[in-house]
Length: 405
Image (tube, rainbow, N blue to C red; front, top):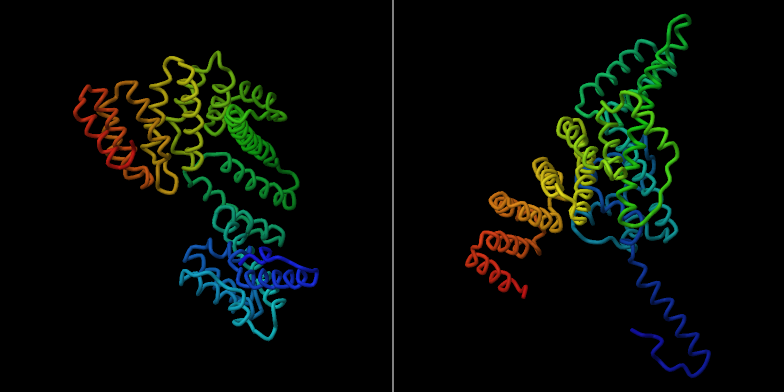
């Protein structure tokens, strides 16, 4: 309905139309609960998270009011039924005699509970860090036996995990800091652990600083951004003068930064980076390891585009390493751009048998809409490289059948 398409002959008629327009907008917006912050956050919950949040809302420790429970039940029913919530229905569930203001207040209350639940889940999903916080609570209550047991468990938790990334050193620094604070209250003549605390803090900070610098250098080459990082030069000198290069969390990012910025010695830095990556890949969590591989792959592609020698094999090796660890997958799928890059590089090297296996084994990981087209074109290129023109033509005909002329 276009209210303003009608000819207005006087101000009275225009005023009436404006009133109708406002009423129409109000009517349409009356059922727009799906656009609220509450529903958008609620709809993002998995089934398991929704069940946990339901228990959270019903816990008297977190919520003593009935209205948020009623609203949760309504929204959860909508989520399970796969339909959008409506303001009018929510108001009826709560208490239709109390009007919109009460509904908005309950929306806000339930959103606050949801945010508290999400923060609580994030805070306590890491058992090791939860132990550190518990040790701090015991320390503040001067419960020495409890403190020592809990802090020992926190340290053991970190030592037993496989990762040796920046967060590992950060967490051990927190453990040492708790130990120092406790010892200063109970010991008077002992040597404190300040050196260990300082060393762990430095390692965590340097690893994070270099990681950020690597990301910035990679980003600014694409988007022409200009970043300035304080203390970076001093950090590089400190790393070079000490033994921190032997720490993978530092050495990898140091050489990653150097092969992106010290172009005269890029290959030497890159080879050192590759050696550390191959030897210590297992001590990094998958998301961080994926970033390391992608930083190196992107640089390799840049060097290939510059016709630099030796980078085709190096880049394909990185792709193969990332594939073997499932690091190229996002939401269970591989990008068609990465897929095509792998094919193009392998063909230029002459790895025809390998790239054919790659296409056949990984094509089902492509997005459905690009799967057959990308795979058929790749197989056609492999056949053409073998001078098997008949097979190449058959794959190209498959492309025509799929609508790609």
